[in-house]
Image (cartoon, rainbow, N blue to C red):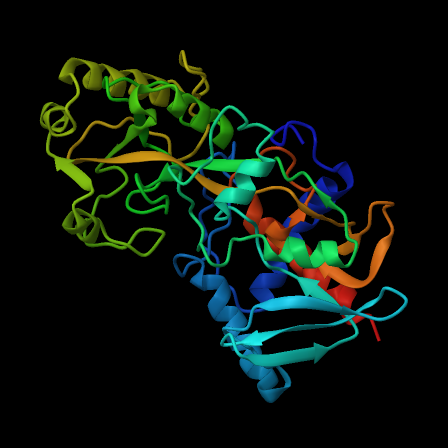
Length: 392
């Protein structure tokens, strides 16, 4: 509730927090293998993220693919088939969906229930500017600011479908930016802001924010820096072996080959590479190291070493990459209840319609804490499936 600026729906927040760990246990039974070590996503405010052993989300999708194989021909997956219409009967019950396959072949599927799991609208530049009256109202979210999401998928089409069935759409002004964007495009490439022992360094060579802050706090601080950008700095502590894949399945060797990540043996060399005063850069690292050593004592930015990974950064090589804020998640969407039923403006369920994931609103409030989207997707997705399956 606090992370979402206390505007989230308390019932949905409670359902998420009560059921997130049972969902982890359920996922393990379904074949997902998690890492033993608990991590921390960017802006999570705590070491509490259960990451899959396989990188970049494949731990989840591979288990799902294996599950689908068990059902054989009972499950048909249609790619290149965007839904364009919800089919409703005279009473207002959703009884199916229609669309076009490959842009030309009509497809109609009749069903006792329909689940919307279409994601958000972070790539819809026109729409996000129209509704941007919330936490980022002072920032023009035009095409100069990229997005982490697949453009074709993150257009908000599911919201149009929901509205056509008279579902209530809430919280559209609640848009989240992420500090891990690639300049000029927006995807989260190269070294990542997740985890610990990485410093936010501005073009003056200084730290300017607590690296453990929430995402909106991080991004607001970045916009106040010269050119609205910063260098993400880390060292051998994060990459002891340049040939070993990180949590996203990428090696430092590969990142260096692409040219966006800078490498130096010393901070003096790094200062020259990223064109910042060496004395400022070394002072910034020393300042962080003091906080990392004094466990539990806040530094002047409010950073406090509470994570088991927190440690002084002393040994080269050093790595740095230029980053910018990027549109990451849209917290607003279809109004739902704890059964994942889509609700109308009176708070009554839209018969036959369910929703889960980023297409929904009310769970994360005005800011989503790092890691909570995965918890949301699987916790409410599981519930949506169970609720929809009860329809006859």
